[in-house]
Length: 580
Image 1 (cartoon, one colour):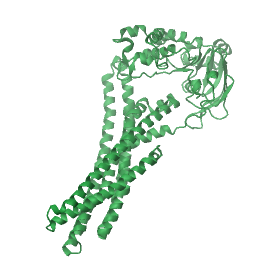
Image 2 (image 1 turned 120 degrees about the horizontal axis):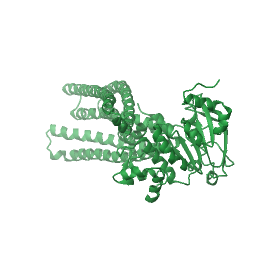
Image 3 (image 1 turned 90 degrees about the horizontal axis):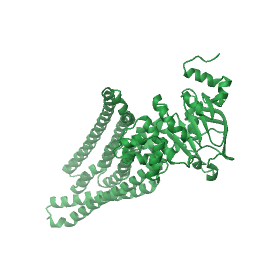
Image 4 (image 1 turned 45 degrees about the vertical axis):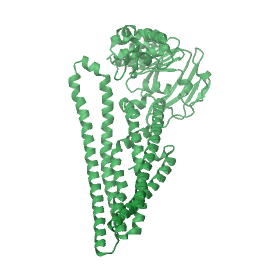
C-alpha cells in the first residue's frame, strides 16, 4: 500500500529514526496515562479522599501533556520536512521537465504537468505529513501497549493479538479496493486538468465559431466523470472506516466483557482490569488513524508516484563535453552528424534512422515531409530533447559530443514550437523569456520587430498587460509573434529551431507572420520544419524526410531538377499524383 520509493527520499532515514523515538516515548506516555488514571479511580472507589489521589492525578496530567506535546513536536517536524521535500521535488520535477523538453509535456499533457507541479506537490506534502507519522505509530505503539497488557491480563492480550490480524486483513482488502478507485480518480483528474487547459486556450476560438455553448456539454461530462470517480472513492473509504470502527469497538467490548466476568468471579483486581480497559482503545487507535489517513492521502500517494515516474526517466549525462568557446556559432562554425539514429520510448522502431548531415556557418535548413516523417524528432534531437542511439557520431566545431544535450550548445538555441507557451505574466515578461534582465525599451523594440506594435497599442496596459492562462487570451498568430519577439530580444543566440511554427494558422496570418520571421533568420543557423510549400523557396538547403530517413537533400532548384522524392512530395501536397 506504500510506494517504496518514498523511503528513498533524501533525509528519510533520519526523520524515521526521530519519528520512531517520538512514538516510543508516546507509548510510554500512554501507559503512564492509563496506569495513573486507573490508580486515581481505584483509590476513589476504595473510599480514599481526593487529596490522596493528588500524586496519581498529577502524573496522569503530566503524561497526558507530554503525549500531546510530543505530537506537537512531531507535527512541526513533519511539516518542516514535508515542505522541504516538496520544494526539492518541485525543483527536481521542473529541472527534469526542462531537461526532457516538449516531448514529455506533450505526452503527459500541459495541464497534468502544471497540476503536478502545483497541486500535486501539495498533495505529496500532505501524504508525507500524515502517512509517516501514522505508519510509525502503528509499528511501535500497539506492541509496547500489548506487552504491558500481557503483564496485567494474559486473556486480554490474547484477544488483542487474535483481533489485530483480522483488522489488518480488512484494511488490506479494502485498501486495495480504495487504491483502485483512487487510481481511476487520479486518471480522471489528469484528463480534467488537461481538458481545462485546452478549453481555456481555445475559448476565444470556440466563442468566435459559436461553439462555446455546445462545448459546455463536453466540459460538464468531463467534470461529471471526475465527480463520480471521487464519490466512488469516498464510498469505499467510508465503508472501510465503518468496518474498522465496527471490529475495534467489538474487540474493546469483548475485552470489557471478559474483564467484567473476572471481576465478578473475584479472579482479577479492579486496578489491572481498569488499566487494561483504558489501554484497549489505545491499542487499536494507531491502526484506526492509519486507516482513515490512508484514504485521505491516496491522492498524495498517486501524485508522488507520478512525479517519481518522471524523475526516474533517464536524462542525458556528459552535458559539459562541449566548451563554451566551441558552442558559439558563427560563419566559420561547423556541424557534422554521422549515422544518427533516435528511438522513441525504448521501442524498437527508430524515429530517425541513418541520418548523415553536415553544415558550415549560417544558413536556413528546411525539413519537409508528411506527418510522422521525423521532422519534429529531428528538431528535438538538435535541441537536445531526444537522445541518439549508440553508434551516432556528432561533431560541433571539431569537438566530438555524445548528444546535443550540451548545456553550452543549448544556450545558443531559441526554440519556436507550433504552440508557444505563454505564462501567466505580463506581455513584457513573456517576451523576456530568454533575457529576464532586458529593459522595457529593448522589449518594445523586439516586439515592434515581431509585428506586435498594433496589438500592444490596443492593450489597456500595453506591455504591462497580463496574458497567458487566467490573463488576456491571445490568438495563435499573436502567440507566435511573442515567441518571435523572444528571439529578436536575444541576438546572442545564433541557432533557431522552428517546429512547424505556422501549422495551426490560417494562410493569411501565416503570410503576415512570414514577414517577421524572415528577417529573424538572417545570420543564424536555422532548422525550419514545415509542411507548407511556400517556405521551401526561402531555404538555403532542404532535407526531405520519410519514415525517419533522409530520402532527398539539396537546394530547391537542385531538388526540382532531380525530379525525385521532393517533387513527389510537392505533388502529393498539391493533390496531384506522383510522377511515374
